[in-house]
Length: 136
Image 1 (cartoon, one colour):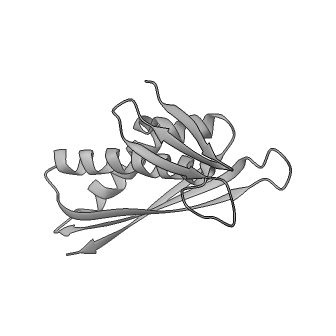
Image 2 (spheres, helix red, strand yellow):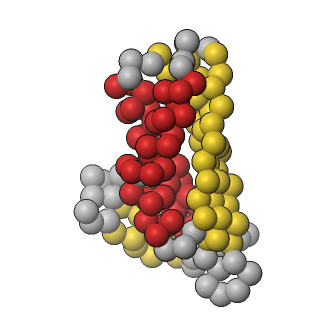
């Protein structure tokens, strides 16, 4: 896997994925033109884990109509201000979803499949997960 980050101006950068997708990264607090670098990291964790959850639920033939993950994080007070805690709250919507299937998908993502969250946990970040099932 390879990506590129190019400086545009001031504290703005353009990230380009290996597949050619582009994203604006902005570290300037006043401009707010793009995603902050550590927000990008959280988005990656959310995307990685959601990918797993949706894939497992589809494989289990669950009728999922929506899935979002609300992520909250805490950072250390000292430099480097690394993440100390990250919590992922999944809200999975569908028709006749089985609670145990959703629970298992979230657990498997956390414990076995989501490379992003498992990598952060290995580095000492406390990561927790929970979920909510909503009938469509």
